[in-house]
Structures are given as C-alpha cells and as structure tokens.
Image (spheres, rainbow, N blue to C red):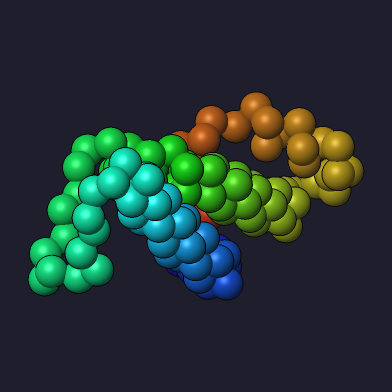
Length: 120
C-alpha cells in the first residue's frame, strides 16, 4: 500500500514546486499592492507576518487544486491494484467487465483493507 501512495514521488515534488511558486507570486502581488498604495515595504525585517486571508488564498489557489488530482490518481492506483488482486484470487476466470462490476459493488473500506493486507 505504501508503494502505491509513495510511488508517485515526482507528483509530490511537483505539488511542492507549484506551492512554492504560488506563494512567491502571492507575496510579490502583496508587495506590489502595498507599493501602489504608497506604503513602504521592507524587504526582510527578520519577521514574516501572515494573515488568515493569505492562508486561505494559498489553500484555494495552490493546495486544493493540486491535492484533488493527486488524490484521484492515488485512488485510481489503489482501485487498479484491487482489480488485479480480485482477478488473480478469483476461483473462476473473470472478464475485465466482470472485475470492474464487482469492484464497483465493493465498498471503499473493503477495497482499502484488501489492498493494504496484500504484500506488493
């Protein structure tokens, strides 16, 4: 199960890069907005002030849009692994459609428990 979830290390790195560049863009937009209003902006004063709006914006812009496809990809890999386990352990020969139908009828908790209990 851990290989399925952690196997897409490149995806996690892409998510981190997207988050970094989004945060950098948000900070530069914040600085530009302050400069347009005529405020002074210190480059680095040893402290970093973060307000709740910046956190919510970052979650909306960077984290949620990247976690949804990543979660769907992980679920697809878990489901494909379950279909493979189901086809291999079935006492009778099953077609691809029968495997998909039986997988669709199986509860999510049972799919996860089955995939987690079988070694890679």
